[in-house]
Image (cartoon, rainbow over all chains, first blue to last red):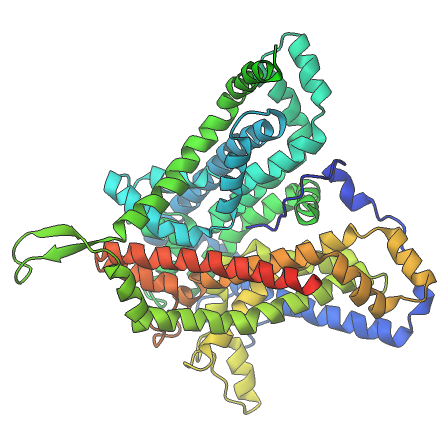
Length: 306
Length: 301
């Protein structure tokens, strides 16, 4: 879910927004050292609040079995059992965890790529072709951005169980490839970043519309990376829809599997294994964010400003 | 030739050009959004009647508004709405207040280490939803929690999972998971405030907190409004956190939130009633978002 606002009147390239305020307006000297220290203290306090549970997770993953709830929860234990914990995790229940990871990757990467492609094609057409019904399509899609996924999950379940695709790969994959937010963002972005002259020139040269879109894609890349990233995270962290649709544990993503393990209350799957599983499941999201950082921070800024 | 006859073929040509781009998305959008919504609305007007003692066959009959009357007489569903409203009223203002202050602090030249704090605040977004709830379920677990352990060692008895504490424990997970995300969005909007505006204000003697509250905050109202609407919607659709909390709080009712209540109807094969509950929840979210938009827009006038 991301915050966006329709105001199609702006014409400047969105990617330029974060750079506009390079000069700092206020000299530092007007602020007293005492208030600077106070501000720093407040900011550190909140950093501790946000980081402490993550720190607990990191520390807990290194602890030997039985150590996790003894001693100081926020510091390392006697033994360093990180490698053993990882081994145990991937061996538990015949190695089902790697299956869950693979499923999550399939849903999130596949769904992310297809939804980005479909949404940017639609957004591009909404921005660049003046066809009848254009505003009606855009308005309907925009309204869907406000409809939360969990509220839609139950109606989807009703339809999918009536058509019999429940408990299949498609029951989770099909809803994952539709991103109304992606259409919104790519329309705004295409309108400001792809010049009409490019399209005209392409037509004069006799290129097909898809070919011209292929050239435009390069200009829309930051928006497309943002759409992919948000859709990837949304699918990876989705829980309600897959838990509703998939009874077969070999089809489940890692979130559904882990919650199932948590509900066993430590037996036969130990708490350490659950915590290790939670830790490992976060790694792909963090890796994705770090590797695409320069793209998404721009796209995010554009979404918030617009 | 009149302009109309020129325009019509051109619009048709544009439609032919746009179709291959728009149709793939539109088709799936219809399948995933419009059909389920429509199907649920239709289903919500029917009910399954079982003849005799349930031994005979069941038949689906038109029930009119029967399911809706039932929704509004359903004590569990009304109570679940009350709970999410309570959690929203305490959690959303706290979260957005913190997010605004943190965004202003990162944006102001007073703060050192801006980049570090931006990343630190955004970290929880990397493990939102059910994984965050999972981690917190361990931090809340009675007898296992390192936090209650710490308090016990200094002689204070705390529990995060009593009936009274649960809404606050859940609100804390939400605040932890989403404050950083909102901070980054508000910060991005603050970055778009032109430096010239702030320079002019400083020359007029308005700087520091005064400038932040009187000039920056009004300028980023659209971003604030949207974080507000999305946070309110987020509270109504509450599901992951309470469900995960159930492993440490067995006292948590299975109809704790509206979504949980609808899911229970679903697992009881009460499909038509689950459809009605979903429609009511969806409609309620629409009404509340419109009200929030309206109320915030009026304050400016």
